[in-house]
Image (cartoon, rainbow, N blue to C red; front, side, top):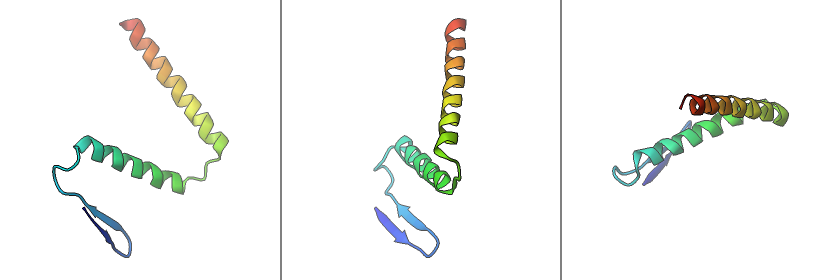
Amino acid sequence: MRITNNPNELVISIPKGVLDINDIQDFLDFLRYKILVSKSEATEEQIQELVDEINQELGNLNQEKTEDG
C-alpha cells in the first residue's frame, strides 16, 4: 500500500486482490460521510430529527413489505 500526500489531496494506492471490492466501497462510503459531515452546519437536534424521520419511514416500508408478504 502506498500513500501519496499531494498539495490538495491524499492518494491511497492498494494492490489489487488485497481487499474485497465491497470492503473498499464501504470505506469510500465512510469517507464520503465524513466529508459531508465536516461541511454540515446542522445542529444535533436537526440531525436527530432527520434520523428519527428516516427510521420511521424505513419502519413503514418494512411493515408494508411484511404485510404484502
